[in-house]
Image (tube, rainbow, N blue to C red; front, side, top):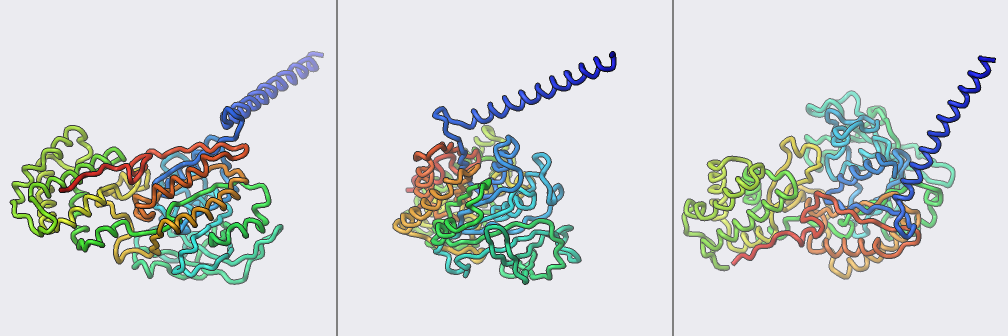
Length: 500
């Protein structure tokens, strides 16, 4: 009897505990669901506006942490001029084909704007990628549509410089059907050797030399064919966890320093100024970035004024020491206001200003005007891996695509072309939003010098306008990242100076 009583009480206790956890889970889900609904009972989907593309992975990861997106099995729809499917570099702490544990491991995935998608695939976040590329890219010789298995692994039996592990990849053509994927017989495998020149970096290998760890489905589609592919896609007709990702450089791509090239600023002088300015200003965040931009633009304006340079003048006859004595005040004041923003103490700061003045004296009026208009910025976002390890640079804001050092296809559209492509992109977005993506990321690619800067605001405003319009059952919540160049206003919201 005692035993039976104890069993009864035990069952009741177990039942109470189970009921407690059931009710707790029920109410937690209810609270989360309510929090994701707007006051008019619409589902809320966040649209993150970011500066550099690898920052997207940070926001995707955050949504998995707060249970608003699955860790695995997600499909990425990537509207971009570039695939961004390069291999990351193995670094200590890198989560080798496993979910990152802690901020530091996540940080190792945020290396560059072209390696974050493969990183997301490595950790299992993505299993299918649709890259929609612009039809203006004729140089890359991409098929209008192609599909293949994209497999990622670790290179075996080879060393690349001092790197202990090197990632490799294999591409196998596939045919995608409703219930199966049929793979071809031939695979192409390679790895990147960054000790070689840009044109020779990709090294072909045999498949057995790559110890494969992860397989993704990768579809490549020209934008003009995207709607047709969507209509026929066996994948998109099934329930799927969608990440929608857009890069503004889908509309055009340029070298950020073109305005300097147009007035024949010698690139050797640009590189010399970059070295000196990087040693002068150690910007650590967007506040430092804009303060440094203002300092340098005012410096140029003061230099022109002191030298009384006219548009036709080619030389400055004032001594370098006299110029420095008259322009150093704002820099020394900044040492007190933001002591961590400048790299050195008063004495070394003055020496660096003297060296910059000597370079300025070699430039013409229109060269200095072009520098002041282009401005100065950090070379990458503060959340980029390596930023705090000495890889951050504050320099002329010419971006990553410099003369003779890029494989990027250059295309500057006119306003009419932007209008036509925007109409096509909005049609693509209409189709994708019917599938209710878990998140949208919109990348500016302005700081790193890809998106044409004179068109960036128009492109972004038109895309944001699409999400601001009424969508049945959905409300899009636009969130501007903390590390945007120029903040919410962007490139056109930065400090401007009048050079006489």
